[in-house]
Figure 1 (cartoon, rainbow, N blue to C red):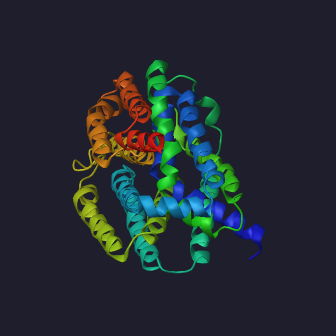
Figure 2: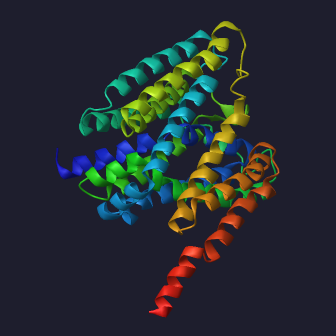
Figure 3: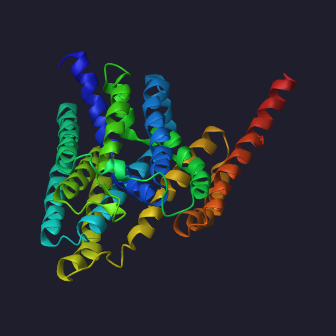
Length: 366
């Protein structure tokens, strides 16, 4: 392959690895709650933050980050795999469309197992998976059309002021999390050009527009159409395969077992109970939003505070202290409380640590 083809291929690979159940479904919740401003507040830091990764991180910095945060990156991959599994069992197995939707889940699981078994194959195979997943989303865009986009309002069901409170934590997550994504690190290391991430930014922005195209303004939810279920399944399974590839074999086995448990606990009730919309063990949209706390709080806090040389115990205490505010803000809709975590993070970053104080003292003494 020529350098240009590989650059584009790695860009589409990153597009697929990052188009998971956040990019496919959170825009629909934000469009419902806040209209187009919610979509913009989500899309802009997401696209710019991820695309910037390729221009901020070179091979030397990437190696240093992987050496220092290898454990956090493995945890990020495992959490992302579980998030996709939970989303599939909630929105695909629990879809009111009935057996066809449940068949889509079974097909998706079969595809997932194939991808996991291929986790050791060459980069070209996974680039092909990324291109195929992007092509599936393009097919979905042609199937659903853009006719509903003008119907989406600039206001939603919730006050616009709440979005202002949520915007900082949303931006924090998307600006920090790419640095813990091992698929991004692989693409930056293997791509012949950092401009793969410019390709990614363009393609991922288009993916988010496709997500908006699947929004039904009348229902305030996704269109109940087969192409939408196909996109969710293909993208989520491709994401699982790409992240599982970056993990140790034992962790892949664990992830596969957890997936099987998830299907048994969450999906099977939907297979046998007519009209089941949200399997009780999953908790529906509330648990979907709780997962977001990993990407808006846990991973960004750990990365930023450790980069600022704050001790691990302080990072853990800060995360635990902020969990109730995330719960109340995202699930309880008391959005003003979402300002507390980024404010605390700013304070902890500004206040000198004991390590930096000792270093400064040693330099003064010398």
